[in-house]
Image (cartoon, rainbow, N blue to C red; front, side, top):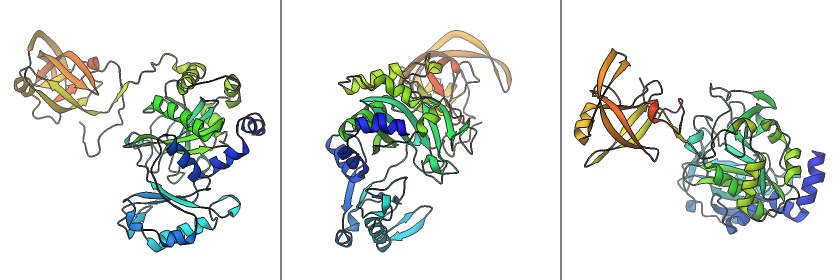
Length: 421
């Protein structure tokens, strides 16, 4: 910690810029002015009169109240289902205007700031967690912490709320810290309370091998946020919103060192490699990060994002004159794709001369084949599929592993309410 303070924070971060970074309201204004993606700024309060005169009916249905100088997640108040007079918080507790005024008065009095000094409060748009994290975190908002120095992202960590942290992505409360390979955006190792773990607490999901969506964009945004903060050494916290994608949540002038425990790697060693470089552009900073800090165990993994398939996928089948969208079951236990014979007739698909022997639940069968062209996750696939009556089954198409080349399959990704047999 002392080495971090002396060698990097003191060298790269001026006192003035640290004070700006400590003020979340000023930081948000900088991000917005620089065009860095962040959630919308709705209102600010610096005295009691502004609170009393505020038009609460002007707010959207969901929003968050935050202290400008809060720390460790303290003082954040998320409101949902707001109708201008009342809403709900937490697990459904009711809240009204008087209660919100009381919360903001407490913030102005310094209830959540360091040293209990008088503070300001602001309201911002609520983050809607990306559906990607739904199966990894039962509640709360996961975020990604990146250490950026001299315009180069040097280390990254996914922070996942757990059953221990009560929905908060705070490592001190028991959130899961998961190291991320800078080059690919794939998770590697993880810790809870600085102790290694191999599964997400409360689940049977392994912590390694999760590919973070929009990884290149996340790296780019982290560098842009560090630039506009005017800090040379910064911790950038980014969240994935379900509609807006990556958004900067906070900029930290004194990021903690738990990130190196999660990555099982030395932060100082990485910083020494880039501290004196002359990096001119965001693109160059991201390129250097990928070249210098790639995880050796993931060297053979392509940087290009492989599409992630769930158990059930919507596909578009192309016929001779029309096309049709259907739900297909992704089945790694089947070698070849199979399609319902009624679909073959409906779309006028061309038969193939080849016949194949398949083994199914009803024993070995000899099946006819058809030339099939379909689109899955934006990729067009031309194949030879078997066809058989499937009207009695839940899905008219089975995608076999022969047609999954270039995809990753998540066997836990089953749409809610869907029974797969």
